[in-house]
Image (cartoon, rainbow, N blue to C red; front, side, top):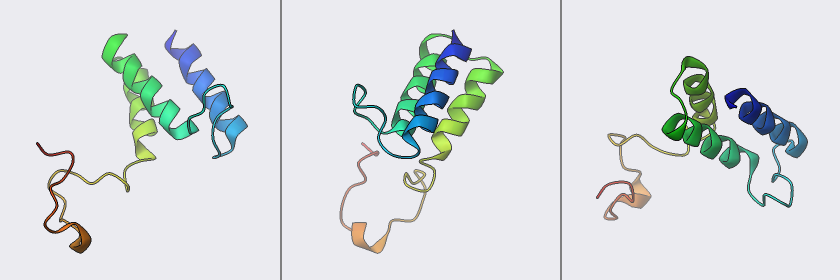
Length: 85
């Protein structure tokens, strides 16, 4: 099951070539890959292969989503971080 999902994600990424996934999905391939990998780990299994896929999928967002202890950019001073409650 996990291998089939990973292969499906890979196919979508290759077909989309960095653009949005097929119209039937209407979401970017990097987001689809992350969500599917997250669901596999959360609801199906946490074996090494599933965790490796989740790690690879999250790499696409590593520079866009700061760590909790990251310095606050000058433009964001005075605004509450959305990921902190």
